[in-house]
Image (cartoon, rainbow, N blue to C red):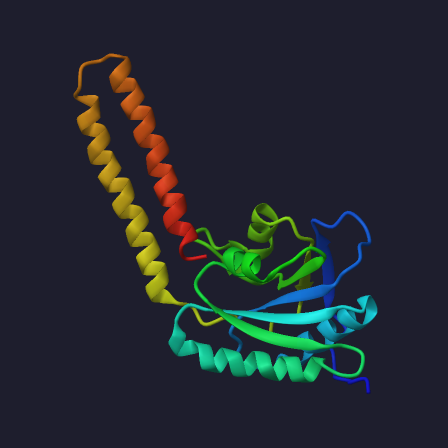
Length: 211
């Protein structure tokens, strides 16, 4: 039996990293922690899965085990609303901070990744869709106008990220001042260039830990 839900008429969707129609085995829907009505999102996802004869995998990401039960209940509820005679659905919660790693652990050939346009991640607060397109080789489907409420900000994580990045910059600045005091030769230049490369690499790695 098909399920009918009220849905706003302003909802839009767009494709990213998708050059043409391809068979879809599963829709992996990346679900943020939400506190308000997510029925419009469920309705849109059901329409997509039904049209493409695809299985739905709701995937949540919890930064700590304490929040896992509430997120799991949310995903189970969404799975129950989507699942019917035409569409099958299941849910899973990963513990961590990286959506890219979570998707890699739960994806396979033929999958399509579904995320919300408003979802953002990383130190620079980039759109999640851009991060996925850069790091994954899966088609990404972006839903717009469905995000019921912004995820609760994790201020502690932001403070840790910025503090760590600033600490790396200060530490390497001191190191580079000392390198600059060495005799001016090729060895000094090589050390200076290596320190800059290492500095940016460490900042990138630190940032990726909180995606």
